[in-house]
Image (tube, rainbow, N blue to C red; front, top):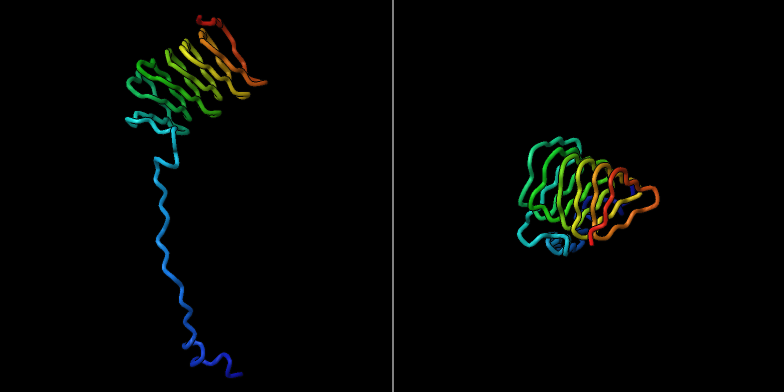
Length: 142
């Protein structure tokens, strides 16, 4: 065996590797403007079922299934796998999943290509992607 792999030579090899402090991002900076000032956000996760009444949150994000009456909720976001059934009056809504019941949007309603809105819908402004569906009574708020 050659002497270039001898234990004496390997023991002498000790490169100086500077220690690095882990970069932990500031959660507020990562989320940016998406974070509510009071943190009044409710996320209903995948495969979660919830029923009842929801009130007092700024933003409701539905990834599972919710059967509820909403009051005091400013924004609702139904993801592609999410389902909302019930009544809601909100300032803005993004529907990529299924929304059934009565939905009143005092601001902007956005229906994604995978979104289906069934029932009574009223809105101030609307954007429906190619493939998005509105079924039922539809009314524009002046």
